[in-house]
Every structure is written in C-alpha cells, then in structure tokens.
Amino acid sequence: MTEIEKLKSIFHNEENCLKFLLVNNQIIRCDYCGKEEFYNGADFMKSFIKICKSCKKKISPQKNTLFENVRFGLVNAFHIYIETKLNTGKMSSVDIAERYNITQKTAWEYLNKINTSNFNYNVERYKEVEELENEVKLLIAFGY
Image (cartoon, rainbow, N blue to C red; front, side, top):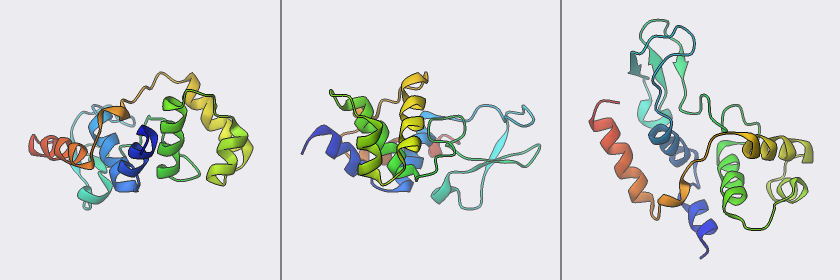
C-alpha cells in the first residue's frame, strides 16, 4: 500500500477529516464578532461545530481552510489535497475531474486554490487512524 493509499484510508470518512481539521485549525477568534469564547455545539462529537458565546454563530472546523465551501464533498477534497501534495508527477485538472467525477473547471479551481494558498497541512504524520483519534481525545480533554 502506497503512502497516498494509506492516507486516503485514514481520511475515508467525513468524521476523520473533521477531526483532522479540529486538531490543525483550532478556532481562536470568532470571525463575526471577534470574541474568543466558544462552547461546543449539541452534536460536537460528530460535527465538531463550536458556537460563539457572544453572537451565537456556528463555526465549523472547515472555516478559513482549503476545505471550506467545497462543492464536491469533504472526503474528496481531502483526497485531492493528498494526491496533489504527495504525488511527484503533476496532477492535471482533467485527471482530477475524471477520477472524482467533478467538472474540469471545479477541479482546476480547487487545484489552483491548493497551489496558491499558504496552507500546508501535514497529513503525512498520521500512520494510523488511532494517532488522529488520540490527538482529538487530548484536545477535548484539555477543554477545547
């Protein structure tokens, strides 16, 4: 199993993708009101949504990331990101479009977003799903 396939197997569902974003994109300040106090949403253990204590806006772990507002699913966005970052050969938007059943324009826009952004998530550090689970448990235990 290649490293790309192994990472795709770790990030095979939306929950694991959200867990990764929870660990790597910790919300510090509300984009709407600027306050820094949050509480966990009702289904926090499933969606990891935080709610601002001041303005009551729901804030997803996807907020302000490459994965915000993707139109083709969070899991597909993660897989495209993994392939783009770890593939030594360039992946074209046509290849991505065919592989993930999206339009070439959408693939090109997302690849452009990946290549021009400052985000560089270290997805390679996870060798097993348990490592991701342990980081989430620690984060939650410390009151995030």
